[in-house]
Image (cartoon, rainbow, N blue to C red; front, side, top):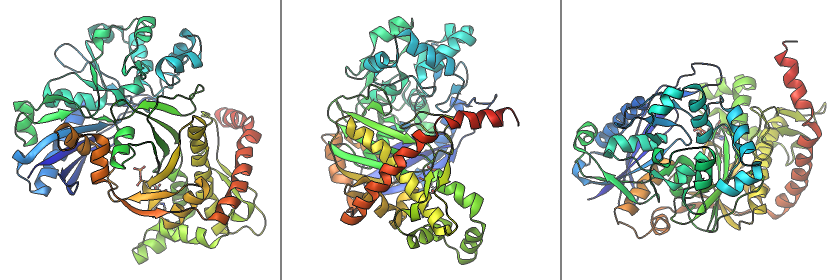
Length: 513
Ligand code: ADP
């Protein structure tokens, strides 16, 4: 029987997943790859290391699934977004990849917006503002600081597209991942002529772009040998890990959104029409559904806030969890559940690593406010959960303001493991929430895209309908929803009241005083 292979190239490692035609996961496996910070704020990886971890993960998954390699009918790719890979004409990598979280390009980001006459103009051209994450900033940095590398470069690829090159020998990108380069006209789903002209970028440097389910090439003999597969297996376009993860959650039709609470939090919605926030407080990308889009906002310290609490202030729970072989997060959320809704008027600002949506403020800081002599530990923890959920709701409000209709929000990530946090999300978002059967994220989405490319399903939407099932729905409580609306309104007043102070706090600590 046929099966499909999804490969997700993450920042810390590669993950491979094998799925049968009914969507059942046969096996998953991962392998790590190193990350280097040659200077403060820099973040680089060697594409060769990606290939090594990906081949390891695939071999392990094949071994675990005990499938006949000849049954693997197609391969889908997903990957960390924005990373810049440059190769020469022979596909030799010219310098380590500059990753999404590399911070060296603040100057280039500012220059890009200035060159096109401001942020709003850039958003009109490519759907997003210039952030240091985005690929064009990295390309301009290389041109300025490493002109010899730039001169020799013949192909620009994103991380997962480098894997494709190794798998098939083809230089191809897909519209969802390339949406994060600042060079794609998302409405046309092709390279932006005006941007390439403005920044004097040779179109030949950029690969052709396809939709995520389209076949881009076939497994070469040497690659097949390394992976333990048969040559000739088709490899589909795939996409960036956010949009491909959305496929794994079935967020591929209008009205569907997802709230993912991992270390960071992402509020994501599918849109049949192209829409972009003129201020770019939320991002717009091409989705993995042909001819459709997605919008999303990112909360930097979501689960990360609770993790900080656990690591810093929960030694006793950590010990108890070890003794009783339980999850410390369960012990913490149980205490939060004992505290009343609204945490007795205590609020937590989750800006532990600055904030992206909605404030785009690297200086923002976290904190509790509203403490009283009677404040309990449970209230402090509850305030953390509520503060993170309010911050996610900030992103949701921006998505709604962009004009997208939302009828169901699918919850995923570590935070969705907690029933308390699930109900809290439904109450705060004021929308029906759901949890789906498979929470394997982008690797699962990549396998689904492979199945569509191989003709197993007519479309991505049809595949998701057949494969992704809602396991549980959570309705907002009427009374809780109304009370949270009041608390949320108060929450939204706190950042503006403090925002002028954050750069001062930064300056104080920077000067070492
Ligand atoms: P990552 O983003 O690092 O890939 P996860 O999606 O697993 O990780 O999310 C990790 C976060 O999920 C943790 O920081 C924590 O805040 C939260 N989390 C994990 N397990 C639970 C739980 N049982 N209850 C509440 N939150 C949890």
